[in-house]
Image (cartoon, rainbow, N blue to C red; front, top):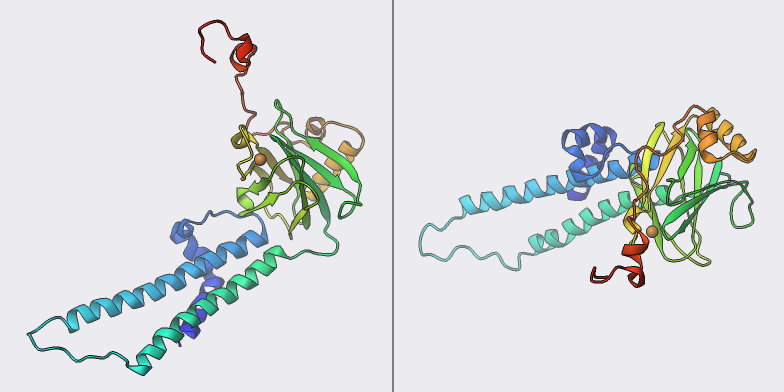
Length: 292
Ligand SMILES: [Cu+2]
C-alpha cells in the first residue's frame, strides 16, 4: 500500500513537478535546466522530495499520536506489543517497497540520461588540460572521426563552445594530463574527463534555450582549477551552421562569432589574472628580503 501510494504520489508529481518545484525553490535543486535530460532529473528530485515528505508527515503523525494517546497515566505497566508479527512484517515490507519505488524511478531516469544514440546530429570532442579547454567539432563518432574545426582556450581568451538548439549533441571527453570534469550547471550534469584511453561520452537530446552559459571544471586538478572556465553559447541551428562554415574556412572563433552576430568574447566568465611577474613568481629573481 505504501509503495503504491508513493508510486501514485510520484507519478502525480512527475506530471505537475515543475510547478511544485518552483513553489519550493526546487527543494534545493538548481532550476532552469536547458536539456530534456536535465528536466527529467529535476522532476525525479522533486518527486523524491514529495515522496520523502509524505512518508515524513505520516511518521511524524504516528509519533505525535502515540505521544498524546499513550502518554503515562499511572504506574501500571502498559500493554506490551513486542513480537507482534503483523507489525514486524509491516516494518520490513514498507521500507523495501519505498526503496523499490525510488530505485525504479531512479533507474529509469538514469538510463535515459546515459542513453547514447547511433547518429547524433553534432559530435564535439572535449579536450581538457591544465588549465583550459579545447573543443573539436568532429565529422563522426569515436577516435576514428576527424576534427573539422577547433576552438582553443588560452590564458587571455575564454574558449566559447558554440552549439545549436534542437539538435542532439554528443560530447566525447578526453584529457591531456590529469582528471578534469566537464560541467555546465544548466545541464544539471557533470562528467569526469579522464586521461589516457578512457573516452567518457554522454549526449543531450537537445538544447532548448539559446543563450550564454558558464562552464567549469568540477574536479580539483591543480593550482588554477578554479579558473578553468569556458562558455557554452547556444545559438539557432542556422547560426550554428554559419559559424561552423566560417570556422572551417579558417576564421578564428571570435571572427566567426562576430560573423553570425554574436558577442565575440565570453560574457559569463573572464580570464584569470595570475598576477605573475618575474619578481613574485620566481624566487631566484625576487629582490632581497621580500620573501619568496
Ligand atoms: Cu580541471
